[in-house]
Length: 190
Image (cartoon, rainbow, N blue to C red; front, side):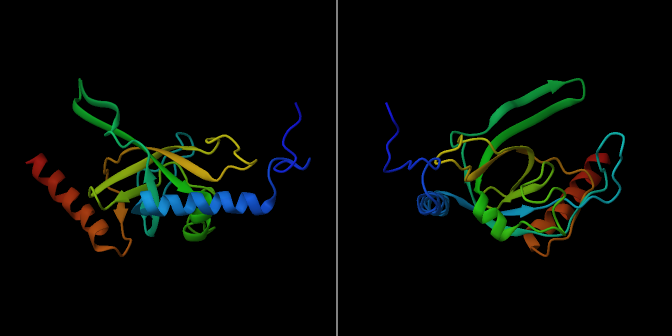
């Protein structure tokens, strides 16, 4: 059975107008059902080339964008784990952001480690819950090529554990979280 020639004229799936319409509908849906969050790109200060990590990272910029929280029934992940190091609370969630909105709002050669997409290790601040989430993995192959394009990024995130990073974004609620973490860590050592 041949494909529908009204939608696929032999030049792949859909034409450019249909693709733009589809992408605009996704952006509008994310604005309706999503939440305003702050995207904080990580700035590497002293990268360890052997282990590939940076223990003295900074977060100097923040951009407000809309993201959809995909896991609405609560956090996924292993939740509470009792290990030899004590109680660990692991809360995972998935955020969805439009590629178009990410490119308009965040994508910048000067701030991103890998240009053109969200980066693992960047932080998402969700003001609704006053919580920080670290991007663990960027899923860019789902939903799989609807109309021959990939219009969204799915960001698999876990609750961020503060470990002496600098927060200098210019947003008071975000920057004060660093001070609260330092006070909490100081009190817990006493």
